[in-house]
Amino acid sequence: MYLFDAERSKRTGLRIPVDFDVRCELVGYPTVMAKAVNMSTGGIFITTTEPIGVQVRMNLEFLMPDTLNSIQVQGESVWSRPLEAQQDLWQGTGIKFVGLPEPYLNLIRDYSLSRLYDDEFVRREGIIHILSDIRNLPPLDRLKAYHILIRKEGKLNVLH
Image 1 (cartoon, rainbow, N blue to C red):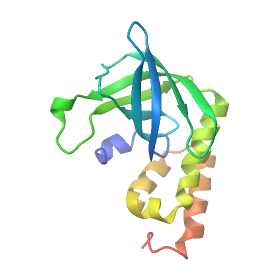
Image 2: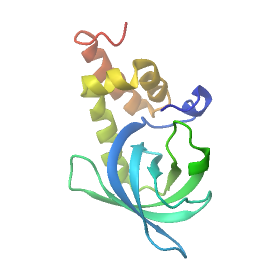
Image 3: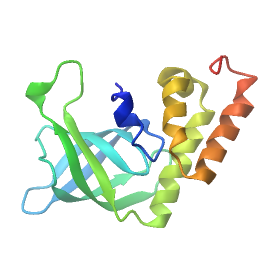
Image 4: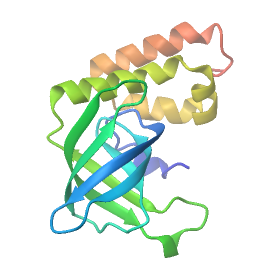
């Protein structure tokens, strides 16, 4: 599942597929449990059984993959795709992180960059889409990402 190229070009982080539970506390509503589908340093895409509207502020809590680090952050829904609009796309909500503390930002960034070492991830996502996401990273992160991919170039046939 990919957004249109214009949507991808707005990203400031490497978006990676994930699969973990997210606890969403919405002001004035019962707590919603969701499933994370993908994530970047800018936000997270979740699926829920209960739709979440746009511009809804919430507190999110989840465990970072491959760690025991719990992340607790505020977010705001910036787009929502209801079930009735579903064709072959996920129902869900795109949430922008609000005021992501530096330690959490580092955890998400480091995890995202570490996925570039995974040959299967690079093949599955496609080098063109990965390079599109990398293009908008902050300079040091972009340099790290390019360095990882260049080192892999001799081992993988993904850059040709």
